[in-house]
Image (cartoon, rainbow, N blue to C red):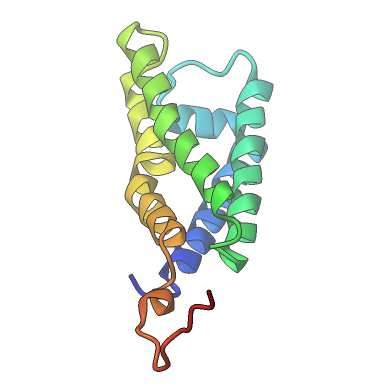
Length: 143
């Protein structure tokens, strides 16, 4: 993975989340229909609240992009949401509470980010490459 890839991944996630969150807030009925619901939202404010949460995650990803190694917990929280969201969707779709057509929303908001976020975390949590480079001078141990 190239050195700038984690930062670019988070920048892209920030942009995506800010756009999707803004669309959900400004056009709740249209995005609700795109998500696969046939009927208008009974409580569009709840859908808009989800849009606000998605937008806030976007701000977090933007912050994390500045210093990925320092802000890796933001990425972890994002990945957990992207892992648990589809679990909740699957449970609700299986009992008929959510339409299966909502899968396209889950696909773009969650599933496509599993591998990139996992790779970002893997890179952040392992020692930096230069840490493993042999030293030109031997280290001394004082006893």
